[in-house]
Length: 256
Image (cartoon, rainbow, N blue to C red; front, side, top):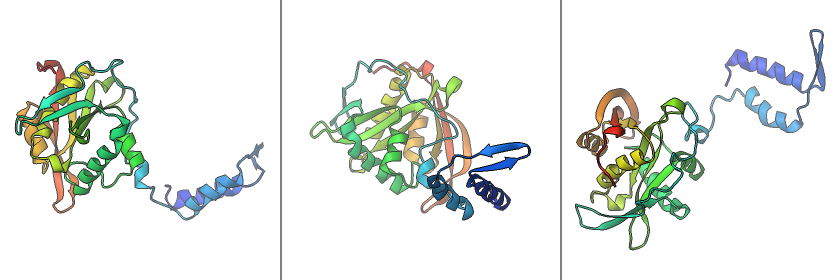
């Protein structure tokens, strides 16, 4: 929103626009704004409203990334049964389906409420869909009831000529943690991202307190390329740094 001087200018412009026509030098300006426009806009300017709703921006970055997937055909190896090395239990890795939405949103909401992994402080369902489901999303299901127990998205980290570098966000249902699901999803993410056509993976914001993710990045051979000081203000810990990791997917040998 504009500052005090800017708001005064805006109010003057509004007064002009509310008239059917006005003179500007030798020109005659005809206006065509209806009353609904002024009812919606004028109070915001006249009151000097400084804030916009958080949810308006919660799913956006500093640029717009095109939505379509990078592949025209589904990955041929999905769905895939995976045996968890820790527990010998089987999970099913597959593409996200619309019927998974409520399960996935509940898991994401838990992660946001915990405040240790994702930067968002809150997110409604509409903006969760725009943020998490905007590109390719994969889920791990419990084969006994088809409930989602884990997930990750894959999408470009940057637009245009840098869109060959991707990013991912991981979720594990808190009732199924400590079973090795996170590591399995992390390992599967790399060949899937490569097979989707990406050439590199870049994690912008891995909080230093997210020890599981930091450990996995280092274990799987990511290059640690930087630190963002005081990148997150955590619920109980205050400010913490964030680490940045890169993986060159063109060097990956693993297959699905």
